[in-house]
Image 1 (cartoon, rainbow, N blue to C red):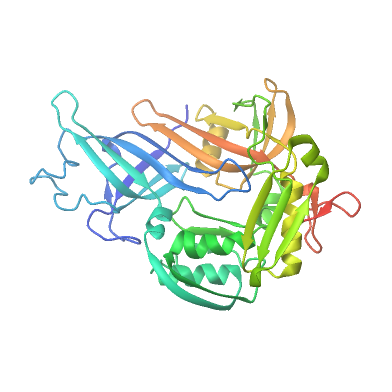
Image 2 (image 1 turned 180 degrees about the vertical axis):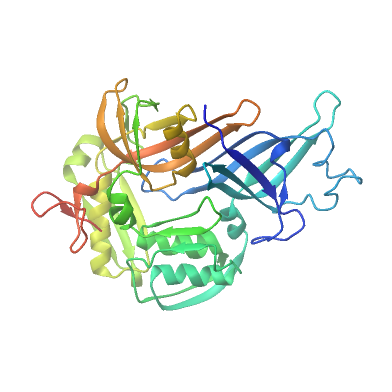
Length: 381
């Protein structure tokens, strides 16, 4: 089966977030597992978490071993990255920070577990007060990252659909209190990309450009696709609070008759009445009925095409799936979550993707190709 040249590097001797000197440790790694993402398009992206199991026979990762090469530098929040080069193409798999190192120096074990998280968690630990004046959503996020001292070359930010934002956030975390607070109104997503960049995608991002066609096509491989209806996300009474404290309420009576009243309160302090109304109607349309459990797609490095796909696919990418066992004909999905499991001794690499249905033809937006045509779709938010 195909197998690339993997590297696992740590910047033990430099502070985060953007080191320049790396120490290779891939030859000491037995296994690595890490995941990030979400189960629903209405949630934000959960930060990366995972671990690397290391060969510690030379006690390189024993922080109390004074003769070790990294003694005094095996510290939390040190930056690491995993990459793979295959057919002369280098793929970023993850960029992360160390959260915990647990060596087991028993003679018959001699291993160490390095737990990891991404910079989302690091940015959540930095609090700041800042006033934003006449900005787009993307500009607000850029200024928030400036407040945190985040490198300019580790950003991939859309402009956003909102403009003229004027707001002050006081002594709250950069990630949840500034970035995600702004996204309560925008409804886009923010996450840490595979290369370590802060990625912000506005709410129309998936309906334009490369996302209009699948980035990969798979036949079979679906798992956990048992049809089931989830009532967890039903909302048939949506109340949006907008700038100035006003509210907009939208109710679906048919849904309430079928499932009972289920209210969803939403704070969107950056919106005026018009946008708040559109948001309430959009949320009601998406949540008034139960939804099937998100399907999962499992691929391995069994073939070259699948291997290149699992090295390259990212959150929000569009994939086309045909699966005879689960009865899926040919359907397009968006990737919402990714988990990588790599065994360097067995030369196996598998990735599991959490998917949601691609519904680009359900909504209609003026001036944006790829949406529904007039008469066949609803106006999107």
